[in-house]
Length: 335
Figure 1 (cartoon, one colour):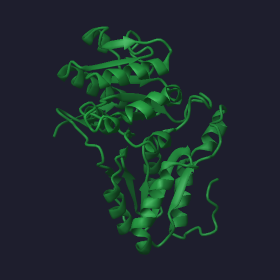
Figure 2 (cartoon, rainbow, N blue to C red):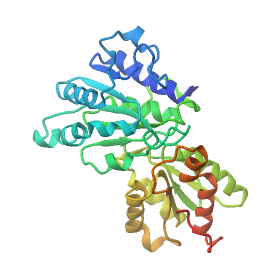
Figure 3 (cartoon, rainbow, N blue to C red):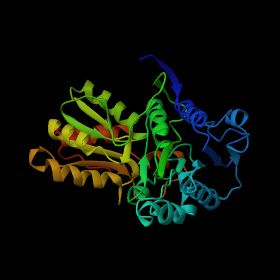
Figure 4 (tube, rainbow, N blue to C red):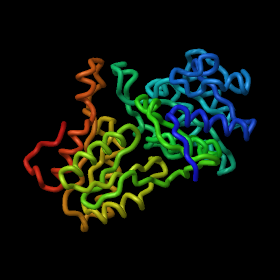
């Protein structure tokens, strides 16, 4: 299949454009997403093509726009609500957690909520504690929500197109550092199904599980480890809900070791839940305990040096893999 190189943000725009062209019930609302094209230029050009009824700026009122989106989805539309920072989604959590996530159950399975919240999170640029969080664990914990965290342009496009054809609420979580990254995207109809992870790098010695912006970091670590003679398999679940447990378990059974990397702070994180799955399914076949590399349990610092120190870096991943292989048995895990 032919491919083109696109930026992550271009791949997202292409997915929205294609689905808006196919389905007149798809519309997008958010702060500055119309005339300005969004803070990350994902929606640039869509206003001119589809008009202000389907590409609409909103006031700075996250609870209001999320409420409008959930209501419109229940009424039969397919809204995309863009929230500038995932931190701001907290203002609409009642609509997300108590309305969108519960509506199918409370209608005996008859109700549908094809609602997508697109937002970005994570560290980078020193935008401080209220604009830098990785909050996927909050949504991961809520039954009824789908949680998507693409790491490449191809995955971003394919997963967003798939999301726009589903009847359940989707938390589509992007990362501010990924918008300008480039990658090859297949031409034509490109769909990535939920619950199907991807092996970003094959290996035999250790399984590395990561998502979103931690994928580029783990791939850098894998390159460094390869120079040391260590073969690392890098696994990207792509969607946390549903989670591709089979892919994870099969990889760990092959390598017999597992390191999980998340940018979010460790306490109560997704990595801990995946670690419990690995322990339950693979314990008797493993040659080392599961290692978790995660952010510190602190608010993200404003200072750039401290911000960098608060989340996993390449060297932290390399050290965790070496501990798993008992190459540095006395090395301390990052706090």
